[in-house]
Image (cartoon, rainbow, N blue to C red; front, side, top):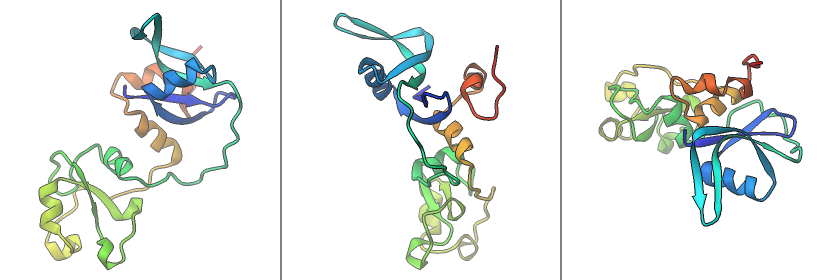
Length: 172
């Protein structure tokens, strides 16, 4: 897992941070490790810290209610599982269905993951004008779903963090 889940002091999921940032928060005593990787350690001179999977902030952070997940290029690639919306090969770029030069926005519903070849082939046109068919339609993930996507969980890892994630029953 690349990212560490950050919980508020009230145990509600807030966001994800890099491993390096998580370790810094723990060492600065701003967070405590709630769940660590059982076999991995971060080692430095005279210091050994378990790799945190879940950390909890010591101080409560007030977060304004978020109705929508913020759009990002990385978010689009993760949402589409790095698969091209036109050919299903590995995607490395983001394509605007309505090109930005024609007023298309950076939004969840106007962007899809695309391989470089298909992105160049489509160029400054809509998929219909380029004669290209979308294999799947873009959608806007919920804030909770975007948090799950940001964690980059593999098949077996979701169960390990189930008690900390929204919409999951707590494991006793």
